[in-house]
Image (cartoon, rainbow, N blue to C red; front, side):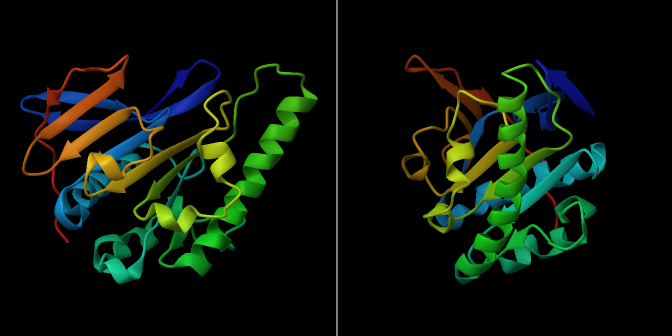
Length: 212
């Protein structure tokens, strides 16, 4: 379900940690490290996306997937086109992009919605206003964000626009510096940790797996 955090909604995603469910709160920038070819990151992202779709109505949560077809990831994301959560509210745009041109179109549509929210917030002089929908961006190739206006909303930590962004990478070093919540699923470690004041407390997790 969607639990209120402050004055906005933040989807909560459950992953199995041994015998105890773990909760990932997608309320900020999240990075997923997956090792060679980002394989482990893609696995976790698919689980998160599927559970978001299962526990949240498409009128409350919209998901967008930005990846590069040259990375041989098409089959990993192909099934997502059937999720109603990937359609714009007017059903004219599917929030799935597999190259730079398509990414520009998808991100432009989402940016328009976020800009309206920003303008409404300014009109209300900072008063708390619940966002109608929460957007979750899954970015499998950060290079596709270059030159896109949406980066203003992704990396603006001072404001809440009802947007969560999940970056996928092969290693921690290739994640944006702004990612402070990390999910790791590679040969070295499987679990989660948060970077705060240079302190890392790693929590081991056994992640679910979705078959292709």
